[in-house]
Image 1 (spheres, rainbow, N blue to C red):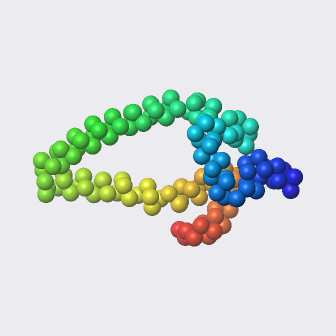
Image 2: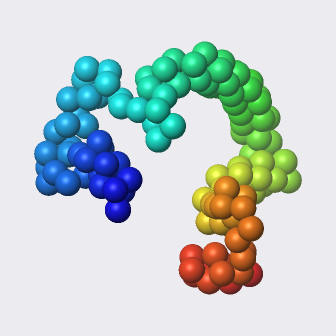
Length: 130
């Protein structure tokens, strides 16, 4: 109870939700994102991760632009043919599958982070039956 109480007080969890939200907005505007549970400032972790995240975003935009526009142009020039239908099918699968597989990925990640957890129990709790 002592550690839980200190943590709730540290993160203003005893305050009403509206006040918690206002404190969050104040912290966002002043760039005070608080600290992690390990005591590291969140803004420092964000500064450390930003260059790699920015590089990944630029690389994905270039990749998407080159291949997406190129394949889209070819599919448009061959409208109604086999290539066009294949590109449409693959595009729909790429868009739809990550959303439908997200619960399974979450279960796997939770099981990994918790260590020795019965995966069947997690599936039952999540309502997912394989």
